[in-house]
Picture 1: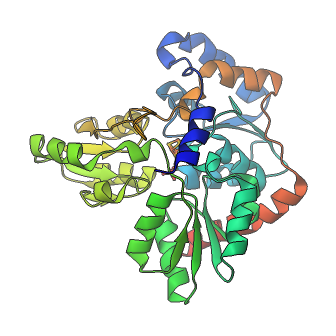
Picture 2: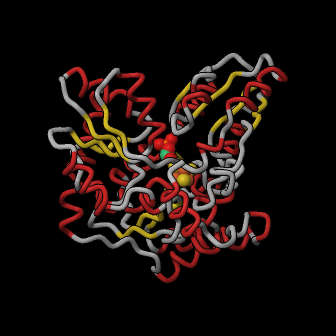
Amino acid sequence: MNQNFLKTIEKNLPISAAKSGEDLDIASLSAGIKKLLVKKSAVIIAHYYTDPSIQQLAEETGGFIGDSLEMARFGAENPAQTLIVAGVRFMGETAKILSPEKTVLMPDLKAECSLDLGCEPGEFKKFIAANPGRVVVVYANTSAEVKAMADWVVTSSIAVDLIKHLTEQGKKIIWAPDRYLGDYITRQSGGDVMIWDACCIVHSEFVAAKISEQKKRHPKAQLLVHPESKADVIALADFVGSTSQLLKAAQQSSAKEFIVATESGIFYKMQQACPDKKFIAAATEPYGGKVDCEASCPWMKMNNLENLLAALKTGQNEIKLADEVIKKALIPLTRMLEFRKKN
Ligand code: 13P
Ligand code: SF4
């Protein structure tokens, strides 16, 4: 257990969860948001892990719900001048880097990610300097400053493909910040990968021993696992992939029951896409024995209709980045999007 990382996370956890959809007057908030989206030619880009009320609104208004790679692509390609990114801050920053001329707003700028928090730019710079001659690949779940130091950015949906590609070219790699995803891509690629030590506090809560028991109780269920999970959980999986890939796997599989080891927000879309199938949350235990997310990302849940409306109304919570950082971070992000097109 990385005690410094655990301390950083405890210090940065939101004090209380945002109001869930049930506590809010969804109809009137949604109506207000719809009017302002038109008036400001804005579009909502939401991650699967946000509250269903936000996902639903994104769908109804011509916005988008997706995984982190698809969100980045949609933001860059959509003509709307204002992007409301409902997710965590690195997603808003990615949208800004790819479309610096657009206004990028977020419902709450304090929506962090444990991976981003666990990879402080100054420390990462030292890590790169201490391991020269390696290609620097960072996960999208990092700050713009960290991306600006990288040769490549990747998301979970293309991490394995890219590391295999670089390994075939004989490259040695630095990978940051998710150690479990780093271990997974190393196993999959056989590459020489130097791994930073942080993790997703939500996905690392899944527990192999408890999930094995669930599998016994549901022998026909398939196990879907996000690769930010620990190796022993991944080892039990019938399918491993990014959030979108897990959703697609559930749709394409002939199985009727699934145990799902990823953030609980995905259940909204899974159930909508597969109304006749049953989805069971994979078992968890608190991260480090202390931080208990129960498969719900505390930062994703900071997004709600109230603060989304406020951001649209006032223009508050705009993502601002230094031009120099945008210029540098755009290079590895563009490489990522080009790599995706070709592979
Ligand atoms: P996806 O790339 O599957 O969206 O995962 C990113 C993530 O960590 C969201 O929490
Ligand atoms: Fe970060 Fe994990 Fe939350 Fe995703 S689920 S935003 S990786 S803390």
